[in-house]
Length: 79
Image 1: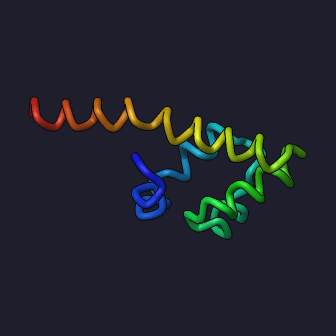
Image 2: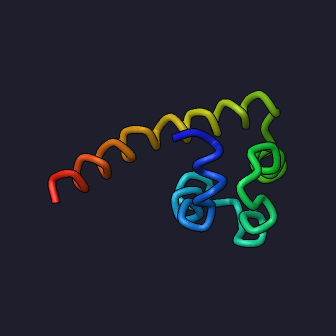
């Protein structure tokens, strides 16, 4: 899954983002609205981390979504 897909499915992704980064508020997530740079900025503020660390965490989160997408596609084909 790439960032364009995440941005397009932002409302659906909000639950997973809350699970990963519990310090982000609903207001934060609404304000971010799928923009990667905004997410990185909010992570810096909420967690007191450097931009590089926030960017790394976001990249790891996106990478973790790839296996889930493959599982969903496989399940859809089997149905």
